[in-house]
Length: 280
Image 1 (cartoon, helix red, strand yellow):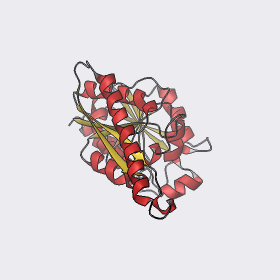
Image 2 (cartoon, rainbow, N blue to C red; image 1 turned 30 degrees about the vertical axis):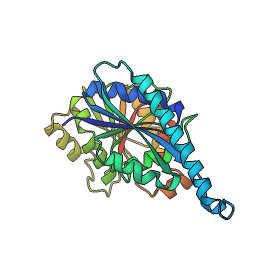
Image 3 (spheres, rainbow, N blue to C red; image 1 turned 60 degrees about the vertical axis):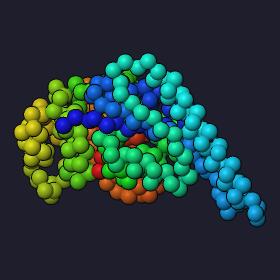
Image 4 (cartoon, rainbow, N blue to C red; image 1 turned 180 degrees about the vertical axis):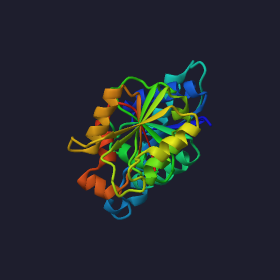
């Protein structure tokens, strides 16, 4: 299996570097790149004066459509003359409350979504919603690219798999299997595994066995937690082993809880210096 449909979603011109990276990944995978140029209608009909709702909505939608078409033109300009790339672009408008449904529908039929880190400097306010829509409504694995990191290459040379025995982590590993099979080395990193967990004294053992049967060059590293946050341990270990990519599950807790209290997913999206492939 390989990634044959790669999706990227743009809602601001500042995301053009994301487009270029997604295009490079699509070339490397011989995949079709689908680009969604999204115009966001942030109007609030309840706040218009009586009788002005229809006029206000019409103007807001027209402005959002203009933004989407401008992005679409920038995409065409950026990819004009691209060699070895099959791509298509579509300009659509969504109200802020309808972003999840629209992005989710597009992501549902993609093998991989490629997005810039939603918390990076200069990202539009809807970037987080788009990322979560691909993960939840689209049930699509998402490769999150740090803005200042080197452009990723597929397949990666060395991959760190963050394993905590959760269904989300296993889902991410299954979706990342084409990359894991092609990588030269894969480390199953277990940080402070639970002694009472299903794997007991052999954390990562059954997972490694499963991956080896698929031809993955996998090994296990069991680490004690010494940093305040799990995401700090993952980032530090990735640097130590020279990883090109991190694979991990997304949002083991609710998104609301992570937004208020923080969590490994949110912290990784904020701090990661390497591409992170997430799924749930």
